[in-house]
Length: 449
Ligand code: HEM
Ligand code: CU
Image (cartoon, rainbow, N blue to C red; front, side, top):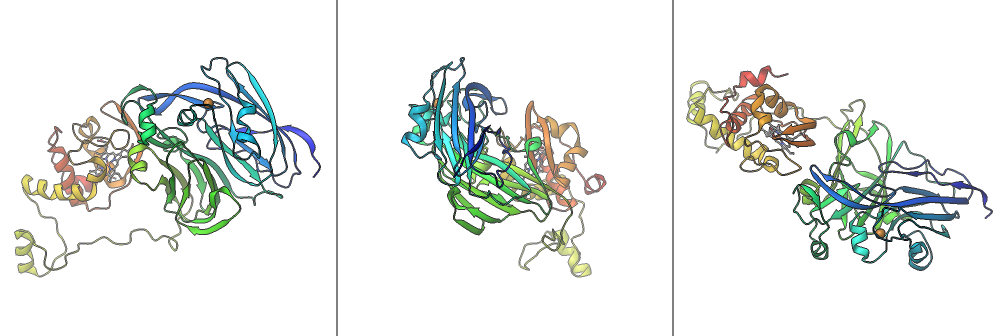
C-alpha cells in the first residue's frame, strides 16, 4: 500500500470521537499527546489527583485506519512528578511501545508503528507500578478502522469504564489519596464511566434523536474490574465483540474485560432516557457506573405503549380494612374510593407505599445514599416546599438540586402510584425522621400540575 501525505491526527476528549476515516488511503499520522497530572473532581466534594493522557480520563481518542504509519509524540508536562509511557494494544511490537515511549517530566519521546490489525484497542501507561498508573486514570482508546472505513452512523460516542481506590470510603469528602491495598484487594470505592461520577449524567448526558443509529466505542481501563456493559431500555443491534471483527447481534449485555473494548450499535426508536450501566449493579447505583443517553423525538406507541392502565389488584384473600369491607357490604365491589382517615392510618399505609416504592433509593430511615440518592430525613429541600416535593414524586425529577448543602445531579423516575398513595407516602415522610409534620391530602396532590 502506498502512503499519501502526512497529517496531524485529530484527537478528541471523551465522550467525543474524531471524524470518521471514510474511504481515505493509508497515510502517515502524527499523534501529539501530553501526559498531565492534575487534580479533578471524582464526585461531589471529592477530588483526586489523576494522571492523564491529555488532561482527561480516559485520554484522547485516536482514530486511524489499518495500514497507517503513526509517528507518536509522547510529551510529559514539566510539572509532572513522575515519568510515564504508553502501551497501545494496537501496536505490534515490544511492550506496545512502552519502552520506546518512556518519558521523564519535561521531555518528549517519539516512536513509530504501523497499524496492522483493524479493531478498537485500549492504550494505557505501563510505567511501574503499572497498576497504580492505570488506577490513576492513564488509559484511553485507539480505533483502527478497516479498509473502506466503518459504515457511517448518526452518532458516535466514546465511553470508558474505570475503577478507583481511595483512602476515604465512597463519598468521603476532600482530596482523596490512592489506596494501594484496596487496589490489590480489588475493593473499588468508585466504578465510573469517563473518570468521575456524573461524567455522563445531567447536563453531561450524551444525546440522540429518535430514528438515529448510535455507535458507542466502549473501553474498560480497569485496572481490575470486568464490565457487564448494558444500556437500560435498549438492545444492541450489533456488538463488535471485544472490539474485534466478529459481530454479534441482538445483545442485552456485553462483557468488556479490563484492558479491552467493544463497539456497540443500536437504533433508538422511542424518546426517553436510556441508562448506561455496568450491570454488576451495585457499581451502577452505589459506585457511579451510570450514564444517560437522552433520546429526543416523537413517541412511537407501537414500539413502546407506556403505561395504559393502573388499577387496584386484590387476589381475593387479602385482608381488607374494615372501612372497605363495610363499604363493599353496602354497595358491592366498589372502585378503590379514597377513604378519609386518621393520621395513624395514613402513616401505616404511607409506610407500605414507602417500602414498595421509595425505600430502594432513599433507604429505610430516609438517609439516602451519599452521591446517589438525597436524604429525605431532615431534608431542607423537602421541608421548604410541599407542592414542589409532591411534584417530584408525581412527575419525577432530573437536573441539579441541593439537599442539605449537598448537590445531586441525577434523576428520579416518576413514581407510578395514585394520588391517594402519594398523599399517604408524603404524609409518612413528613411525619418522620425530623421533618416538619405536614399532612398531605389527595386534593393537594391532585392540584400539583
Ligand atoms: C429526589 C421523594 C422514590 C431517586 C427526591 C426528593 C424527594 C423524593 C422529596 C427531593 C429531594 C429531597 O428532599 O431529598 C421520593 C419518594 C419516593 C421516591 C416519596 C417514592 C414514592 C425514588 C426512587 C429513586 C429516587 C425509587 C431511585 C430510582 C431520587 C433521586 C433524587 C430524588 C436521584 C434527586 C434527583 C435529582 O438529582 O434531580 N425524592 N423519592 N427516588 N429521588 Fe426520590
Ligand atoms: Cu504513567
